[in-house]
Image 1 (cartoon, rainbow, N blue to C red):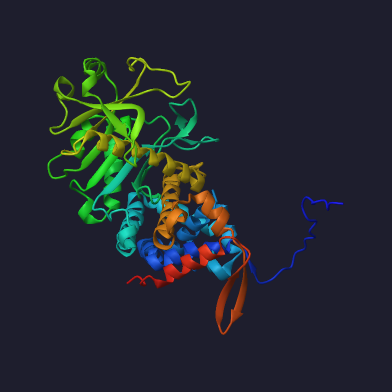
Image 2: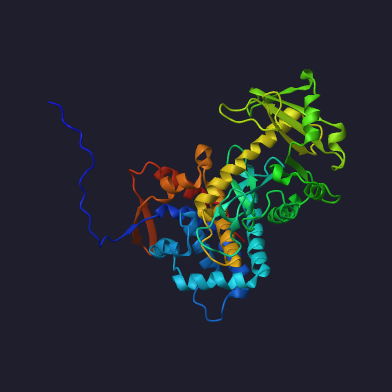
Length: 458
């Protein structure tokens, strides 16, 4: 007779347990804040907005909200999750105090935003130096992806407007530094815009690019070693002129709309002029070819611009557009990188799709909705979201290796941050004892050891 395998065990539950800490894996983010000096930088930045008799430091309050967002929260009240674990996260302000803090820098306007952004930029430079070969600039170039994201509003909020997708909400323009295939990415720009903001508004792309460059170390704020990538929304005369202006000399790889002139030029390209596209490993990409256009298509555009077109068999079920030709899907992009084969340039531009992964991570980290009413308050919330995403990018970059470093926020929360532990106090020390049977306890402890080995911030 075979024993029957049961379903789920019947477990009795009762309250009153002591010495148990939930979300104990969040200590990884706490140690990241401490080792990067983010707590000191944000605290110093918000000193002008601290009242004389205030009990809680405004910088600590802002970081508490960012920690709650990084752990999965999506509103200010979710700091209560941290308040329940003072042994790990320290004293946490009450909900009314948190709300007042958001109102204070929101009323400060650009001055408060500038202070917070300057603190983030200062810490970012330090983190990249400490990260060494794991930093995004280890190869001598920084890649910044700009892309818009639609945020749905379910109530009437300031600047919430109908969007081009027939929804209602906001249309922020985000910027992310690409960490390459071995990592994720970190936010460097967050421009809050009304829902009816255009996808190809040159002034907004210029503003977002300025915000992104201000977040980079000073040596990357101009010069060819910084590459700006966008989709066709950035393919405007004004934006490309700004990128290639004398004294700025930035590299760019910008998607272009297939105009009638480009379409007619593609029809005249002989079959021998098409080059097979390649995959990241160097293999030929099946059903995709590229070519470079010149002549009249480049008139009026910045000097040194190269226009590259790709034709590819559409995916099964995809509908062809009026700009496609001979049953092939046509896409184009412009770049000012010289001396590089077009197959390599096309692969580099195609990797801009990683920005979609960054946006997906941002949606899962507080950008699913903008929880406040006023636009100034939601801009502060957008800065908090960026701080949370910074932590979720810096912690893996400094403490994780291999495939684990590529985990997105949802997986980090499920496997690392949600781990429970027993809190033991001995010899005036507090020790978190993680469950030995948890499959990822070793990943957490090794990551904490790597963080502990980093130098303390000056």
